[in-house]
Image (cartoon, rainbow, N blue to C red; front, side, top):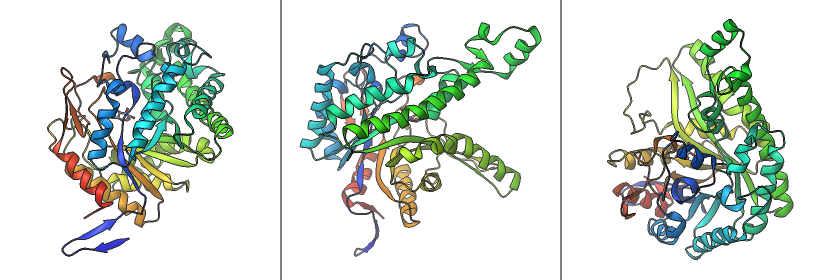
Length: 415
Ligand code: BGC
């Protein structure tokens, strides 16, 4: 794998390695009005997404930029609410749109990786109870099968869902995302004391915890059913799940080590054990770590997350336990000044390389994100892009760090 050059040692990645960046429909496309998030924005509970980066109309220009930056792969998501705006009614025009997106990637020799669902739900589906409902896996699988049937000739990599644990915990434990249900022990006390029923506190208290567990089970069932249905349409395509891993680790203290072990079990392995048999590969989204007993002081991203890209290695090794091909499906940082990004990317790529030399079958690396975008409940302030967006004029400006990543992509390796 290592190749000597005159002056440097290049750590070469396996031939055919996928290098690129990721986006998600609701965060970049613009003008999506029929989702739970759009409804929440109308009610003033989350920022309005509006026209976003207008990627829906400017995808060709954006892919030209990706191409110029040496990318040979691109991960993006399909907006369920565009494809199935009413229950059971599919919109051929929107399928045509995504076919054009795929053709534009093909013309540029960029391999597509589709995520079928990245957080936002069609409004009709969230209104009828979303993933709390028993039949939600069937409804989800029907949508996935439809898309795979229509797009499977242009794409052979489908991730069913993005970060189920983040979706579930923000929606049902923290209550910061739709459907805004919050698990609080304080309310448990008041409920117990006053003898009130849980139902009277539908969006706070103990009940969201049980709903969270139900949602997580339904998401796993949804993935498994979607896997079967997609395979019926296109047996040869690869179906994966995109898993957010928080790296929980510890200092020397055995008690801290046990805490870290339990935390990893709950955050990563509970879900993975339910789905890994129905994964042809696994996507890893890595952003942060928590080291119990750690006194080190870290530099911070604009999200106030520790700068610790080295954690990528342990996060990959954690998923390698399932012995499926791995992709870094997202990793990156919010850094409006572009002060840390180049160094961060370099270090996270080195950590990825280390995982490969330690035996993990890693096949691709997608930086998050190609473009600045709508950072969910935080709106447009946080800047993750290799490409800066001026939200007034929609002008695109490539950040200097994007060229450091470009060098890595073009060399298929790193010093
Ligand atoms: C999500 C993205 C998000 C990014 C940065 C990931 O958890 O998949 O949608 O923008 O993290 O917070």
